Length: 229
Image (cartoon, rainbow, N blue to C red):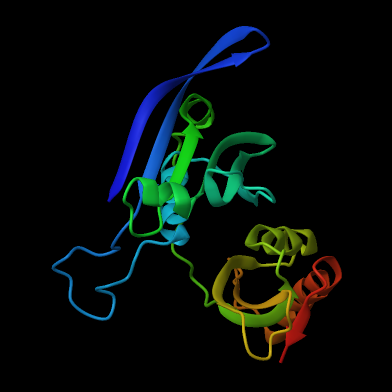
């Protein structure tokens, strides 16, 4: 099941009724159609499926600078939850419905929900599309595997990378998260791929190493990350 609904919400604020349009999304159950064959046949929808759908929507609306901030206290309705921010403005929330509530409505799998302030998003949307030619020069990839505190979020890692301001950094991708054997309690192992590319030339190893070292130093300083060899 993957559904959405657009409707009006009324709230009492400062003895006045505030009205706004919201969009709600819900996902649960199998990730693939029933006729699908292969290893992924029995996979269930997870938090990343909901977040991926939201990010695709934000990209189509031309919204930049979206951040996800986890809540320390998700509340009675959620097992875990977070706020969706556009700049400093909270534009929505997302999370996994409490299993207790889910069972009351006969849901067997994780129920993932999100609710967004549609009026605010439509006000900030950017319909202008820009295009750039395909890269003429090759990219260089550097990977980092590191131990970070369990509380360190993906957004915190990206913020730390932005603070380093590495030259010619094109993309940052999280490709592994591990907890368990050889990982201290209260920490997690994460692995990131960093792609470097210049628009006007082929980068040298020296240039890439210098930029990448700035990233490593920033991660160890701001996140107390322990780089794994």
